[in-house]
Length: 347
Image 1 (cartoon, rainbow, N blue to C red):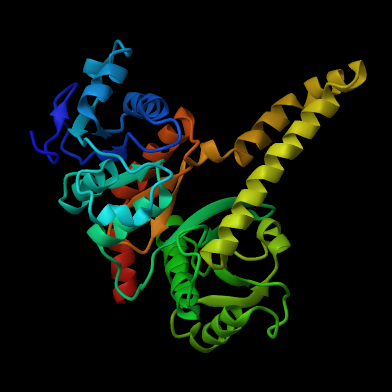
Image 2: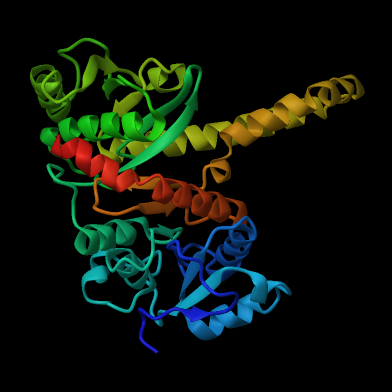
């Protein structure tokens, strides 16, 4: 059996394309990926699990309803570990992320999802799927909760060293994404810097600011100027663009701070009998807030700029995150997101 042939484990495939999951990727490997895929399949998502066939069958055997679920297996004997280099993608054709991405390229899957090596996922997506027209480098777009709703932050880790023109391209691409995916007619764009004044920032930021001022109108970008880190969570703009090094630090800082704050709140609410009683009154509201701040609720972030749907999740992702990522990938696939982006870029 070739790596591109799906081995069915359940019912006859439905006509729509499945979502390919790099089942070997992540800090833990198979268990959360398989558990998340099973939950997504129970919700109606067709999933192709890409990885070691023997290990996958062994992991799936613990689910009694597996033969009734729309799950397939594609064998991929190799996996690029979290401590290996992203450039290994070029020479390891049977690595699970390469096999999963080729399924999308060959029209056998609607999207690829990986909780594994983010650099390897980006490299495989770039080399195999190619770039959208007018985009030199793809970027990871992460949606973060803010006071004004959700704000799109990019890049959050795909490119640590950037050119100013990349930031211009990402501002345009993110604007089109929010227009076609979320029906926001004129999303605002801010450039992350150390001050709101036009003259503040490093060399790349200053050059990017000048490019955005010069080309924003002709490229359909509603550029409002520089924004600071605090503006991300105030929701001052719909989109914040920055380099992947800064964006990833901002994202990890936000996630770590949210986790720490909820820990402190929990300790405070359990410190006295009176606070415990008060905690019962606000429990539902806190649970709703915790779900909003929990990365597992969103599952994975889209790699925007490649000619296909590719999603990158946390290496420490749990089953809930995997399920959320698969559900999101299927929604974007069935909405025709890539075709809409390509049409908008061409226009």
